[in-house]
Amino acid sequence: MPASIRPGDVLADRYRLVDLLSESGNGRFWRAHDRVLERHVALHVIAADDDRAEGLLAAARRSARILDPHILRVLDAERSGHLCYVVNEWGSGTSLDIMLAAGGELSPRRAAWVVGEVAAACARAHAADVPHGRLNPENVLIDTSGAVRVIGWCVDAALHGRPTGRAADDVADLAGLLYAALTGRWAGPSSSAVPPAPTDHGRVLRPRQVRAGIPRDLDALCDEVLNPQPGCGTMAAEAFRAVLAEFVGDPTGLQESMTSRLVSGGHETVVLPQVPEFTVRDAEELTRPTPPAGPPGPAEPADREGAGGDPEGAGAGEGAGDAPGESTGESTGEVTQAEMPGFLVAGDEAAPAPPPPFEEPPARPLFAPDPPEGAPVRRSRQPDPGRDSQQYWPWDTEAGSRTGGAGGGAGGGAGGGWVDTGWPTGTGPVVEEEVPGRSSFRVAAILLAALVVLVAVTVAFNLGRGRTPLGTVPEEESPSATASAPAEVGPLDVASVSDLDPQGSDGGEYPELTGLVVDGDPATAWRTSTYKQDFGPGGLKDGVGLVLDLGEARSVAEVALRLVGSPTDLELYVVDEAPTGVPSEQGLSPAATVSAASEETVVLDEPASGRYLVVWITSLPTVPDGFRSEVAEVVPRG
Image (cartoon, rainbow, N blue to C red; front, side, top):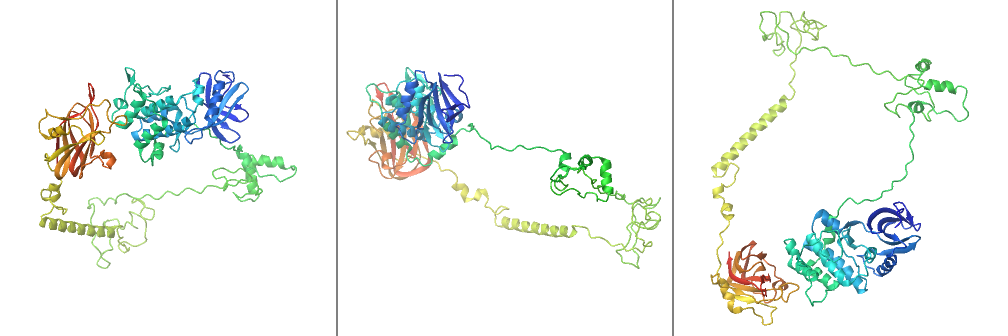
């Protein structure tokens, strides 16, 4: 691979290289820009004399035959000069490996939907005998709309020097994708940067052994494909997709929800429009009048000298009769103070003088003047009977009126800053000013008093009725206090017990032992047959169970179980009519689903009412010769 190829190079006079995304040996994977159609494309490039060149072009031709919305299609392939390249459609989003590394595992429904979308693309491509060849998390993209896109169909395997892929390998990679989405570990045959799945004696551990809470259906599907039994056929991609579609059900909203798992931080090349250069003119150029068109006159140098800020020139211009601040230049091209605020305008006129500063206010005394020696500090003066009783000076002094006597005077004198009103002593009209806010204060005080009285009356009324001050019923007498107390649960009577084996050839599963689950003896137990395979999608049955008749409709709050062996996966149903087939196929919803230990008390989220309690076993514990479950006691409580 030539080392000279770098970002910015243009291939075939059309594709400009932007970002180098990955390298494989001497092959490189680029993001490029198609200058003809103005869009981003993905570019796989190797040297023209590379051993993989023919295989890469052949893979591009095979991939171009598949038209599927999940596949990023091939747009161009060519050997030009010393390079061989394949152009693919570009997808913007987050690959599955980055999504798992950044945000952890997917939920079971999301994982099944994502891999089901890839399986749908595989089913269509396998029908045309065009497998992917390297279906790993790096090649599964969740785009910005939440849709699933597959990268490098056939091309990525050829770029890594792998031979033409097989459909069976793609199906194994599909199981690896499901395993990775559920556990964050990679178990497929293709290589990947995702951490490998743990193994035990050459077998990949089941997903439920790596992460708790994975549904049994998905666990069994991964185990069946990744750990095939000898002599068993290979599952097709369409069958794999059908199992996932059945688990997902209605996929509405799943695509939109995947956008919340996208990892931000993608690098996009942003081209800004060209901006004309700005030039900065100095103060001299800004303030200089624009000369008239034509050759310069002889007075131009003198004008330039005056505009340069010579103080003598500015003074002369003003003395010639121009008012300060008035513009004398041409209106075109001259910058005035209104156009350029904050700058001093240098020209023929001087800047206007700033206004004079505010005069200092006269000093005001902070306190009343001291009385003459020996007089009281504050002695109220008796009002003059000949005047209004409200017109009097609050302090009596021997020096005369503070507004015109020797203590004050017009200039303030020793009293400091008092105003001379010109009235003789004792005759000046002194009007008492209204205190601001006094009326508002009175109104507020009246309202507050009224509110206090109202609250007091309300409290007294409530206490008189035997209530609390706020009017509520006392806690010890509240009817809700007794109603909210949880009722104690006790064992419910069981009228009869029968077995439920709708998928069995004989329709029964040890019916003669069913009564042992309610005999109160833990040493006796009802048991299932011994199976070579566990229940589930890969087993012979979906499950077997017991039906307990409570005699009449009763409320069941919890069920105590005593089992032999563990774990036992089971579902509890409380129904009005005894089922005759698989409960889930008859439209029944379980009241509880648990993976029970040897002794388990299952508390229902909400008490369920019905006549029949169905214990439906969906997974059997392992025994030396296969799989079998034994139930010693079932005690419903309500």
